[in-house]
Length: 252
Image (cartoon, rainbow, N blue to C red; front, side, top):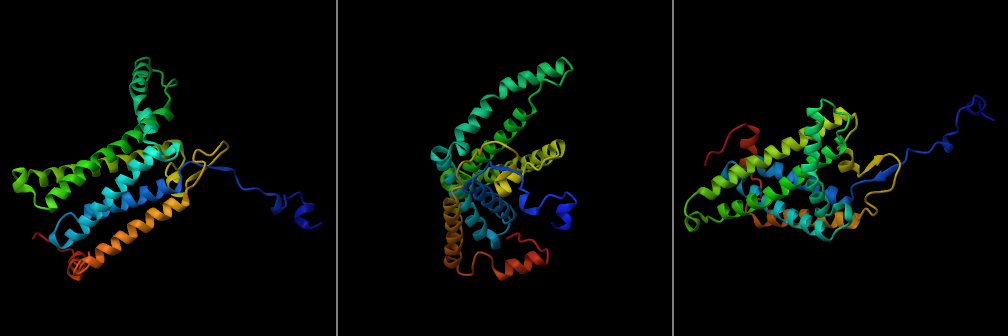
């Protein structure tokens, strides 16, 4: 008997890690981060002719990711279905009514804050998916110079306005996650990072579908590589990089 056992310490071999359950599968997480990075890159490369090919490539990437998410939301596993988010949104009027009743009676004990959190999260996700369609279509029309056919430069203006609205929703989504994480003293971004949360109960996502996540990542990287090879000077030229590092703006 060693010293640690004689002192009543629990042998390390008997210590079990805390139970976790899978909440988000791999394809949803890979889609989420590819979508976020592509939008960030597209937004930052929106100004200037030197960044145009990169901006357009990332825009097409967003369109492809949107198509994947819609298909996955229609025929994917139950926890990833778009119908689940719509059901959460359909409960919005009832939750708002209960909130108004609780506020008027000056009693917040009866408010279902978890349902409110799920409602706001679903609203942000649906808003992003809905905004993506006009953002992509207006960007495609602008890139292909459809202004004469459509009767003016209003398409470019729509693209810019929708892009700014998209950014506002993204920032609101991030603020919501940070705020709720602080209030609940719990990292609400953890499921989208590692897919799992601590606690008992069954897995919400029964299967991880890692093969599909890998296929999605490979497809995006292959598309970026193809676009880079098709561009005479690559998607990011040396001139654009040097101007970005020196803080210069391209107003061409």
